[in-house]
Image (tube, rainbow, N blue to C red):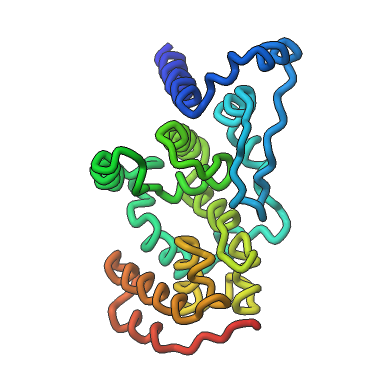
Length: 267
């Protein structure tokens, strides 16, 4: 009985988030006309390789289905070719990503209260969303399912999907999915394509300087791609290495040594 109450409460919150995201469109006459057909409206594709495109129309059924049947929804979105398991990624790459993107990844449950409070103060000051506090889990569900609309409704849906993701997947599984779906710039989606595309090697063979450079790209892939601006990519690499020092993943000496090691690009 307790589980049923909890499930109902989560579903209620989800519906509220849906309506805040623009769900009132289901009451439009044309929508009601089609609802009796019980055929879900087609969702604009956001397959891997086109994550930068916004989703303009998503049906109520699609929103509900992906929340309840999350694993099935994820499988439909994740590309299986060139998929890299967490065991095939070096520990230095995992540590670099977590250090710079979400250093409390293994301690939170999909969202970071400290980051949210910091961002909330900024957003209240401006009266709109100016600063995000997305965890790796939130970034994952956004890349898989959501548009890039900057609204409180979309953030609410992102929050709920992140909680759902944490309930259905382990931390390693979430990190693995993130690494395989995130955009690394220069038209490389996923760590497999990015590692080969930038350095001509599989992720398992990445050295610390290369791993740190790749870990810095998702923050602004078009800006930090070494093929676009190598100097900016190098500066971002320094930021990642310093973050790894702060989180205790590497020593200062190792970080400084990695900063001066040459980087050889594939092209």
